[in-house]
Amino acid sequence: MGTEAPIIVENVSYYFGRGSLRKQILFDISAEVGEGEIVILTGPSGSGKTTLLTMMGALRAAQDGSLRIFGQELLNARESQLVEVRRRIGYIFQSHNLFPALNVEQNVKMGVQLGDRKPAREENEDIRNVLDRVGMADHVRKRIDQLSGGQRQRVAIARALVAEPQIVLADEPTASLDKESGRDVANLIQELAREQGASVVLVTHDNRILDIADRILHLEDGRMMDLKEAVAIETSRMLHVLAEHDPGAHRTLLSFATALARVAHADRKLSHEEVDVIRKVLSETADLSPGEVEFVMTVAIDSTRSGQEESISTNLRRLSSNEKGRLIESLHAVAEADGEFTESERLEIDRIAEELGL
Ligand SMILES: Nc1ncnc2c1ncn2[C@@H]1O[C@H](COP(=O)(O)OP(=O)(O)OP(=O)(O)O)[C@@H](O)[C@H]1O
Ligand SMILES: [Mg+2]
Image (cartoon, rainbow, N blue to C red):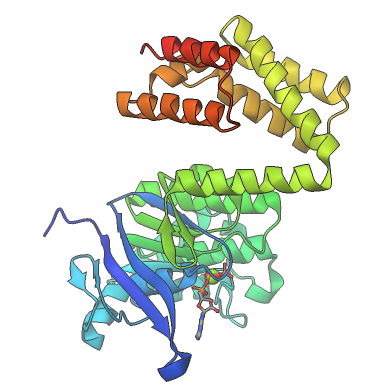
């Protein structure tokens, strides 16, 4: 039991409503979150993220499958067992659920009172410490309604973490914050969770904070989806939109990225300094916007490096022999698709096969 992952979800489905209005929301979800692991749960609005998160938090009853939290099965568990599980979890929600009439310290104290009680003096020390860690030590006596959105979210984090829970569940904790405060809040959750060895499941739409995750899970229409697939779909969807609405821009960005990749590729490496220079040149000479520069750089850099200074062909060689076979087979199929398999197509495919070491 002791080595079991703190969160284990197996074949969980969930339905809202009854009778003819009954609608399936989650489909046969399985997932595990290990000790100290930070997992981000993404997915479009309505895909079931909050539903799944509240089930993990023992805030919503499981209907079938198995949900084991700290080894406790939640399906058909008694209320007293659910309460016991909840006491060991820290919750951070978008609408932070703080008490507006209480001050910062009093709100964090509510979090202490949920965990295992300690002598009052130690508890007060814990409260001071955690408020210090979230940068709110100077605002201890302020009422919640006197704080900014970012400050409120910090207090909510302090309250969730003051009792050192082994699991932290956060639902869009950065949604109402500006870019910078969102980043700070994400970093803070990451730091504190690491210090305390807590497992974290964090739901977010905010692509800018994905880097704090050890692992990313993606939900689509209530089904767990492979991240690779989700990224591929999203990227091609966006490129398609761009091609439809602004074919010129689409052409420009892709040609820039390809050309840049080939140039950078020529000496098979791309240092940090070079990257900075290229960024500058792109925005000044090529008149690209900051977002466009980022896109072009990402595509170019991704195609030039897999480790630090390796080439595209190194990347290709990393494929398993099975994948190589599939790649060559599909290149043949593509070449034959127009009913004509030309000599130059054959040569190009042979060259690629050779690069693959086939
Ligand atoms: N109480 C409810 N009764 C009926 N349907 C519900 C209820 N709560 C949520 N749903 C439906 O379940 C689906 C999943 O909702 P959920 O809140 O889990 O999505 P989400 O991924 O968290 O979305 P968002 O990103 O917008 O927060 C949605 O289609 C939603 O309409
Ligand atoms: Mg939600």
